[in-house]
Image (cartoon, rainbow, N blue to C red; front, side, top):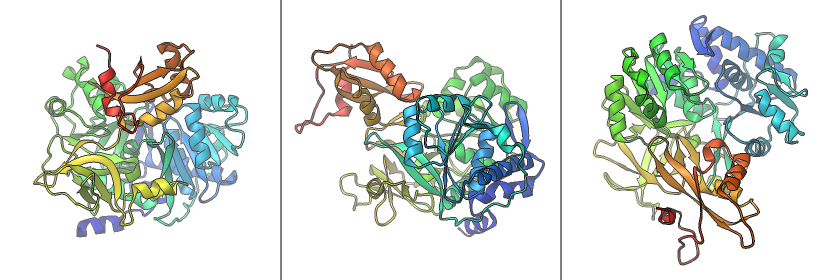
Length: 517
């Protein structure tokens, strides 16, 4: 661990220092290619500095929360680092969230500023959801009259800005993840936890200047965030796509001579099925990474064979600021395993029924994590925090796993009923809460259905109230108005009753017994 300690001592201690540190080392080298435009480290640093000056001019101070909603772009990156440069707290939001979901997160974290695409701002403003917002910034030119565009925001600002020195253990980020109660929870991440994660990810994967990364992972997601920040910190060139498109990804690998490809299983399975894969030059790839959900070993073997490079699996959580486990790129890799913990991070597997019992090799139980990557807690939610993290600092992940004789970890299942759809966490209770709002719905239960591409998709089982009538299209329309697209049930089935325990509790894992032939 001596090398790890020395490595940490040489790196920036907070996110506010990251981009200036990288710019000092790599200067005019190309850091980012986005929307067919190239951005040097210095240009990105100047953009972030102008954002920081503008925010400070508009009264944003240390500790203030700023919500950032948008797809991958240079402007998103500049805003992210501009917020952190002034010691404010960033609240990255998934661009697929509905207006109601955005409103909840923004209000819950008490955001002072909302930065978003113009169309989102217009919809939120029309629905009366931004009346208390002190400042609205549009990432483009299409925002409401009350907003200021990104271009106008930085137009008169100087690129000279000295980053605020912050305590590494202080709050840097609030990331919302759905809770089993149906209400989102804001996982609080310190500067130290995020910095540690990106340093250790680069260390284990041997990421260095000269590497070229292709990614369509959304930057607000912890996986995409680690990819973005580890690239900046270590002098990599990041080819960042706004969204996943098979042909565009393959073209980028060949055109730029990519050495690393990052993605979730559904992306790789789509690439495997695309005709262009057969004639794309992939010889530059050193390795690919996959995370977000489990991937069938047969598909992993296909990726390894057809991409002609190692496929490195990783596992993480919003509550861990990114990765918790992965493999060393230059050591043994076992397909189907999520690897080993990041250096200095502890992993234990406990008896699911008796948390005081730590399990041995091959025994299946709940996966626990402890160390510098564990979140500070859930924002304004002490009860949820105490349920997730015990007095000894162990985070209860809810994942069921085991270790083999070589200490490699394998995920078996999830303790609760979370649905993992193409790398996104979906909780049945959140969907149930929305569907239950429909006047014709008496009861609703949501379970999962296997899907070859996305891993799992949600299915809703609905009991209609007496005296009412409805249709599947009606319920689907209601869901589309109130849920992000990835949370909308792919199937809806009307039923008369649910399988229940003796106490009357709905047995979600038995819902599939109701499926029509």
